[in-house]
Length: 473
Image (cartoon, rainbow, N blue to C red; front, side, top):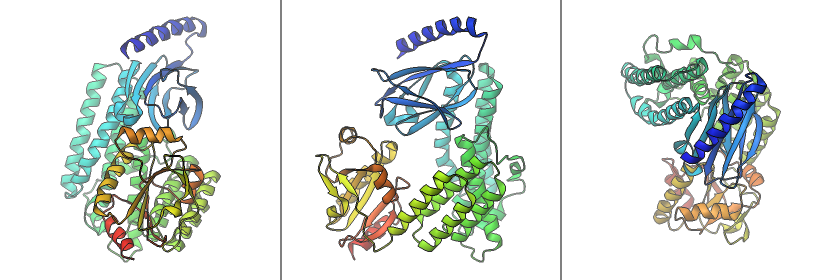
């Protein structure tokens, strides 16, 4: 990799200097890299959700691409369903190396502009680790909790300031790095009432000290610059959920908060519609919360109420059609119904109607190359469940639109056998018919081929209770 990087940097420098003489300093940047265990033979580059180009990998799974007339800022590269962001400023020549089996953790940048991007990816990974600590801290009283998260924030500010002293940094980088620190901190405050173990969330909300949410007065809910940033979007989701909690409590008689309450979820959609004016940001938030509600709810009347509210507020016609179809599929998968006719293929290439595989209590789970962690964890969990419930049939279905060899290779690599492993014959159609969202979705069927639970999760605390209900029918 070092030799490859050196060669590319020399090439970039040579052509960059030559072009400089012709273009009189026009902004440009190079981005390239090497992908280990690629899922496809291309990388998609985009900015602000606008695709710039689809770049093919060469015979060594590498690519190099020049962006002319560069619009400085955050760019996105996607591969096989995974994506990550990179900050590109004029004259940057960024190379990255990653392994799709450990996408974010394996990502390393080299070249001109590497330090700022390695800083940002390391900050992203640290945030993921810190989330686990924040969850534990949420059980503390609000004053103690605030001290802990203040300490985390102060440490990150210290690292940021040391980085600025050590290296030359641009105002654009500093703006992004500071926002990442701030929005992560704000999110930690917004989730406190929800993660705290107490059931009376309104009382917990009232217990926070004065000034706990003072930063809210400066929040821009329509910030187009940060609209594609993970930390900004995460903050908006937590913040709007928290404010909706207060609104909901003002007209609710129930002290025990239910996140799945139709009233609370309608309040949240109403708040988004009234507070967010940017169409793109608003549509993304409406879509996210609507899908989250629908994927966990089984009441047809409530589903229709949420759908009606969503359709009346969203301007995204494509998403509206998709959510309408998703709701229709969900409603057809109610308790006591049978699965629609969906065809799967085993690793010998034989085709089956999925209903023909159900001859006893059955659990159907799903996996994708895009969610590598879930793939490993779910298959290990299935091994455990198979030993505990031998009277149950456990089926795992890969939902990707890839050939048999791709899925077969990843199963073989991890020592998982092919028994009761399948792929969809028509992945897009089947995924929609079975309303597979999120990826943790699990369907429980009884011995009579009747649905017991269409939105279960093998990792949930009550999964085994649901399974025993199916076994004992």
